[in-house]
Image 1 (cartoon, helix red, strand yellow):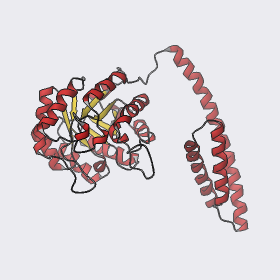
Image 2 (cartoon, helix red, strand yellow):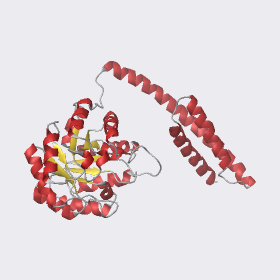
Image 3 (spheres, one colour):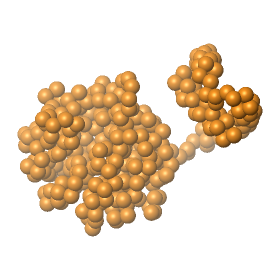
Image 4 (cartoon, one colour):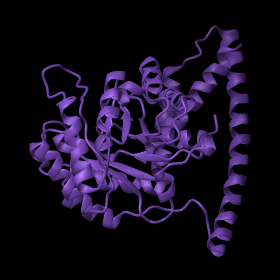
Length: 357
């Protein structure tokens, strides 16, 4: 697979100051609704119109899209506004409808990305075409499922493949609808450095008041563009009303958002960054040395536990360690969740070292 050889319109926008944008309603609801959306969104300068025709819902009985009927509505609205059009496909019949109606591109939803059988069938159905494919991350935070889906489309000859980060399902409380777990798209970019990467802040947040801030974070991280849900009258939307913004809000937001370049052209900034990175490299070497010494001590403790018939897991000790390091983190103005995650990983590695005895 030629990872660095992938090209697409998104890549052309990276570093130019303006992100590549796809915008439109969560669902195509009527000819009037999608036409109004296209006309108003096109005035912001956005060139790609999105609209869902088939909506996979968790429970039956809710609005599941207008289906095939809406394909020509989407196509006609795009043509009238001078925009390209994209919609979600989840099976071969959906692909057929898209191709029959001249819709310009497709996206693969999170539920579909996690199913290699469906992904392969859709990729085969698209073989021989040259339309863009936008692959959203799977529901679970698994870079293998995401990268595997991308590879299936590339292997079927698709030349314009994009990745779309829309957040992940997670248990527990969060102010996000689908927490971003930014380390996952960062890992995807490491694996596929030439792959255009877009962010879907609408699905990540689930709230229109958080969309701009999340979009800004994505662009600061180096994303090439955004896929944003925009509705002429969001509060009356038939699906995902809370996360959709108005075309006016989109225009204002795009006036404030800018992409960033990954290359440094300012020689003074480059020299300053190189000097600071050298400091980081030295600290990293010290950290590795300290971790190795810590593991040696853990192994020595494990030998004593083994000879004394003690369990590897000592819950009281582990709780006291967590309390101590969280208190230290607070003193140093470090994020407690960050420190907890690090020490949970260290503790797991320590137990594994002791279990190997």
